[in-house]
Image 1: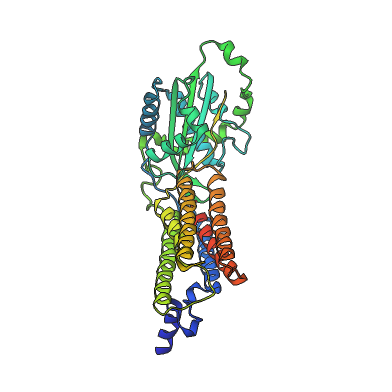
Image 2: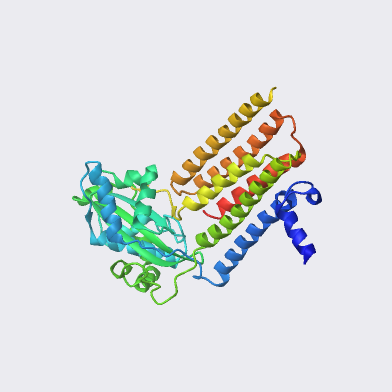
Amino acid sequence: MGRNLKKIRQLFVPSSTNNYRAKLLHLPSLVILVFLFLTIQTGLSLVRFTQPAVLGYASQITPEKIVELTNQRRISLGLDELKINNSLNEAAQRKAADMFAFNYWSHNSPTGRDPWSFFKETGYDYIYAGENLARDFVSSEAVVDAWMASPTHKDNIISSRYQEIGVAVVEGELGGLRTTLVVQMFGSPAKVFAQRESSSDLEPIEQAHALAEIEEEAWQKTENPTKLGPFSTYQNQPLPVSPLAVNRGVAIFILGLLVGVLLVDRLIANKKNIRRLAGDNWAHLTFLAIILLIVFLFRSGSLLESISSL
Amino acid sequence: MSKNKQRTSDLKLHLFLLFVLLVGAVVFLFLPPLPGKKEGMIIGLSTCYFLWGLWYHQKKDNLSLRIGLEYLALAVLGAVLLFGLI
């Protein structure tokens, strides 16, 4: 008992038995902490593939709020509001369904389909078109804020060329992770058929038709989630465990432990006037405190570079 | 160098580190979550810290392999923890 206590003490308090430096701050202990975190990461990855849909991001995002916030940003810049177009809404939902069906996080499907094929499939003839994508966000505000912070997404949101908008918020499983995909599509309807024909970015309609059957199946499975609202796909399942929350908890524990040990080590070394050949505790504390600050303030979510037909 | 001068010099170096890391943290938090950008910032932050450690101890004339490795281990730990978030 006393021996164990002595060993634990060595971990946290500098003394002659640990070369006057808390053992947790010795190089092997730091390396062990790195490997401990990496092991937890590997464990999470294994859960992701062996128990799909256990990990994920539950969100409160709604298409209506995304449109509202997008229009707020436009109005604040003196631009016209975008009108909701049902064909664009449907195109966005079909795109999200396709992403879940073929398990990809990209503007272009692994089957070769590009975003514009979804516009055509729903009968939306456009002169200009654009697409913004987001995933793993928790709120509509966070999605729009992230888009506005990215120059290319912002260009789509505040472009005066677009007149209409369609948004889909669909929950599903991507890469073994339950997530919420947000697809935002912009368009300017073609007034003259010839204008559409002259667009160099148009994809042959045949390519879209080749995959229509599979995509239709995926589309049916989503049961029009825009109308059902958040959590619609998983309303009968428990909320997923957020990988961000797990990582954040472990990171806070490790960082808190090190910050505490560094402070105790510094105080005792000062009190006993111990001189050691070691790194500077204040510098370590500064670095770890900044990392801790980031861990506390960081919010989840990923974007892809936006795309437009311009 | 007198003790006071040494302390002032130390303080300046620590404030410089704090400033660099704070700027890095703010940029990291406000960067749009596009592929590659956050990763680059994490590597940048950790590298800055590691290099500062080497520079600081070089200036104090007590740089050794053990100290260098200590900074490297903490820089890697910080980077690994942040990579776990993105």
